[in-house]
Image (cartoon, rainbow, N blue to C red):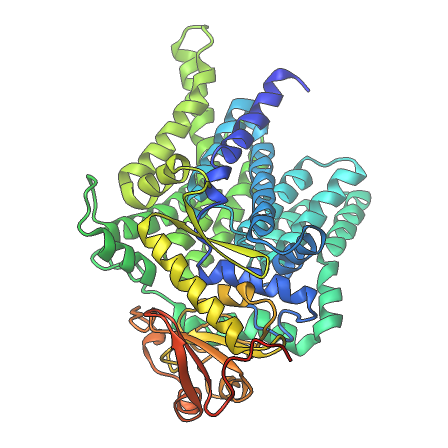
Length: 544
């Protein structure tokens, strides 16, 4: 491989690897990561997503993480290494997509994508996994002339859908556009590859059944959850709609960075993404440079991704979609800028500085618009200390959960260790555990990591995640699940959840009534309380 091409790949990949040590030690207390850990570990115990436990996405990520757990053991480290592999694939895919416009442009486009996604750390998010397979698959489909490359690219597009079903339109756009202008042999390769990439759905369908699969991937997230997670369109520039953005605003106090207030930054990013996507379509239509059809495909994929933001214009969703858009934007800025600098230099070779300038302009513009949501979070992702002895952790039954760094993280870790030790004392292996909020009429978020930390206990409910309109819906079965539970771990941490949507409305009161009538407090901490069925024997750590 020539040195220039090697550097074009190595530089963005190195940028991903630089903060890895820090990212491995960040706290693993989010419901999203806890759910991936619990669902993946449950697969090894025979509990399948959609059939036995709820899961709102296509099943690719938990199956992949479960496979890694089966080989290397169940741990946060293994799960995050799977997430690292997804990010490396994404960066490689973006680099390959953009290298038609120059190796330096390709490296800078990949760096732009990583700068946007770095604040998410290494969590094996289904969206990041799906976007990685989509980027790599699109690159191979557009480049592929031989049988293997074309088929592999289409297969990767299929795998993107297997990890995140909402990427289905984007995958079909890529494969379909290539299919339309191909000869019979290339069409056969595209079709064979796409079927191969989608084939894991068939295996999952056989294992869980069509009803559970459709209900888990379509009915729950699209019909039941939407009202409880939707945020106002357009975002209110005076009020952060997302709960965690609001919490961050409260904890950090008034904005100390120059520029817009934090809620206004979210609104500005929203409009910037919409306008930028529209401009990319116009630029692609009027493009006079090389690889016009390639740019048109990339711009069209960006359009197809926009509905993800329209569902919920939160900072996270804006970055998930923006990771693709910024890469294409770097290309459309770098190429004409390079031509301009080439003419300006009167023959001197200065055009090679255009891609770094384009990267600086694009990322610099994002930092000016959103100094907190882009600038501060990205900087913190690269500047925090790595995972070391100062990182607070909780260890139980051979599983380690990082909590974070600092005095507050140490206090949380101490609390969690107390809760876990009490749970072990109050239960026998095989007992049923439920984790949720104190107010079970409002199931907006939860501490699903407890299921991972207590592997000897079986989830009492299919609702490992707490989602509005699903766990608390009438007919959701939560009360029936709790009637068979041996231990509850409840917290008021999320009872103050406030978002401008249906999550504020109380749901089915049956589960809350059952807990009030049938469960008694067995101890706990200021943050988490443990409840057991009233009259049940305490101190059952002496075995079955």
